Length: 401
Picture 1 (cartoon, helix red, strand yellow):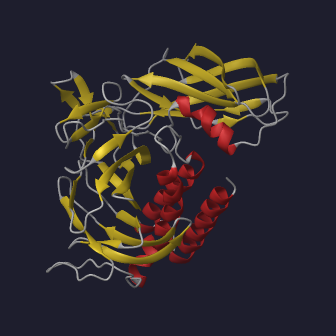
Picture 2: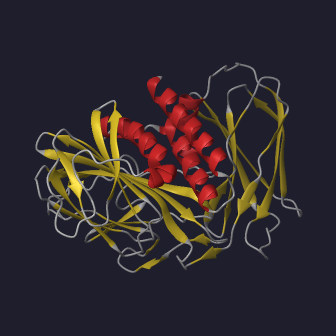
């Protein structure tokens, strides 16, 4: 990594059910049709805090914070404590239609939040259940459920974005281990390619959420149980150079990876890549590849190659316009297309712009649907229909920007 590498990491955490509270007002702006009323009706907000770890007990007296968000940002904040049964209640709150409420508790130094609820006109009661977990230092149940790598040719560089959906398949929140150099607990570690430059972020970066390492950075955020409970997004540039060898190593197992290249001349080649087919995106023709599963610490290796060039000896990956693998398409074909649409917006944003938050819940829904199908909890026909519906919803959402 270059000495002058500008560490401005664009990394965000978006849990599937538990999002960072600072994001709720932004989500409201994107996803809510506002009908804000200047005078709010009296609303009762209640909830139950339960323990998601077998044998765990929710302590009485735990503090609960209720945050209210409007189009303008945080509107109000209230606190109370749990009763002996783990319940909480806020009576007579003046909440306006369109405002969003979220309940949050801190248990064993980890913050847990309810799903956000938007107040509807005339609504008088709101329920905000919260689940907490015991903690563990063992990462055995943590995986990268989906990895999306978006590469776009831009002059003499490739602009690269890596988007991670991280899951915890266990029953305890992984809090990591103490990093002696920083004095902080770190969880998942991320590398960047040796040739990377202009690594960028918006929001908390090194010295805040992330700890700098010799070959990348480590996250300090705990990873609670559930599918896609943490998201990570960062970007960098690579030289636009045929034959450039790119090596990516991951701190947790990778269930599946999708790599998308938007460029008129270059594709990818590597023994671990499978061609998923050409795609048409709003930025032009793209080539898609899949990889995985990969073990923790296993290196994913591939090169930039001219479209139509012969892949290196021993490579099963291809360049150019590969044909679709119909068996794999059942599992990842529609996801690749959805990812392509997301990539259009992720890669066109300036480093200071916000990511396309309005489509992130849809991508997380696709991740959960994939997991349900692979676990046999949903039939093939229903799986394909729901995936198609999600893909169309991504399209409609993006086209409405």
